[in-house]
Length: 300
Image 1 (cartoon, rainbow, N blue to C red):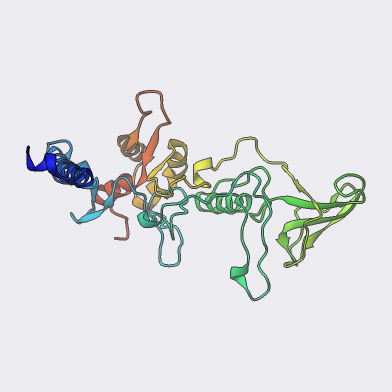
Image 2 (tube, one colour):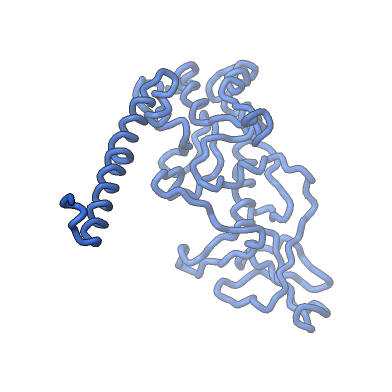
């Protein structure tokens, strides 16, 4: 009889468990990482394995081609000689350690207006965020930034309608819930009732929320990706339509011919995955880095 055959059953179980731990540690904790590291050194894979590092105009690493960046000045204003990315909800913007979405859906239309002297007490709805961004992009690119359900001053065009039957019946009071007093409501009257501005802190919970589409183009000049963030908040791509909208501004600021700039945009435009998944996209981070190398800003 062997020593192991004379051991109690519980000891045998522990010995078997230790053997499994040793084998899995060697395979998963040592052999697998070393194997993956070796494969990552194969030409064509090495750059991706290192995080797809981006080289700046000065030859130094300037981020990753997989993670977007903000191109704004110290005051948070867009730098005019750069293509602007889509908005980001990751931290203060494109923070890889805080990847996140806004978690607001299509029913997020009513703002929490900030109280007087407490600017941080308010919260914008998704609709107002979209409206404000569209207005800002329109002003930057010198195009019409209006879009459905947005006021001219860049908030959600939403009325709170009080009715004598609760949710039905005759309108008795109408408030433009996203326009804090003393703002002038975007419409003067609704169903024969004068529309008034909203008082911060007042409860409009009993009003019927009524978005107003307004008299605006069916297809806004400002593309959807210019006013909405990606799910991760890290995407470095924008749509070709948004890149085209920005082309005249960047070409002017860089002293470039627009046709030459469009050729550079094409170089950093990817097609659909497998030929049918997703949509064509322009990598703004790579594009801006290429512009810095080949066509530095005129004042630089």
